[in-house]
Length: 301
Image 1: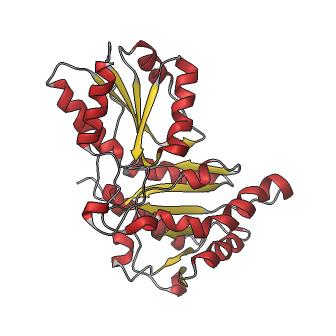
Image 2: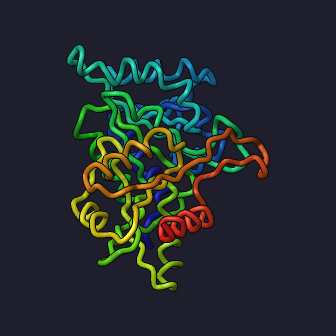
């Protein structure tokens, strides 16, 4: 039976510690079911370091570790990067360029959603996106996670992984679905990738061809030649989906695609409002209905 993404992450961390490549740092590592079951049940003597609840300080601790080893840093909610990111961005990400002293950190930043408030919900990779010295990926499959880790081991960069807890049960690889004579091509990031396949199947029954491009590398944005060909030849506009606010990564990537093809790429992400702690106040990633309506708008135009 194929391993889930959860199992792959757990094995990756265990191997990292066993080989003594670096320690694993984070808050409450064993308090919330070992971070959704993605952290091996080990102790501090094994290299699993529980940090304090002082988010503004923990980034600095891990930056110090990055100067002597290759640490893995787990941020339980992506929104907490608003407190963790400053020293990572302004020291670790710039150290190699300015002083020729690399400070590699493998940042596991976990997106969640559903009645968890204005800070801790959804994805926030845009916080890092605009800064130099950072690499960003969004792995939703076991093989993508292995690729991300292999890149980290072979290089000296700060690597930010925009994870999402709703992908942890996934054991299947997500491959691009590029149709000839496509009507609309959807470029999807993070958890929106799963919704994109549902949309494709829905419109297939209506004889409308939807293509899907899976975005794994966010920074640098690795654009496949076949994506550009499909977008250029599409009958209507493209659509880019994100689990972050659109005023950031989503619009930047859409601009790159538009610039290279002269075809308009719309964006759909979180609504421009703060989330609350109840279902009525949630601000969630684009669901099936929101995406469906947006595709209809594109086709009607």
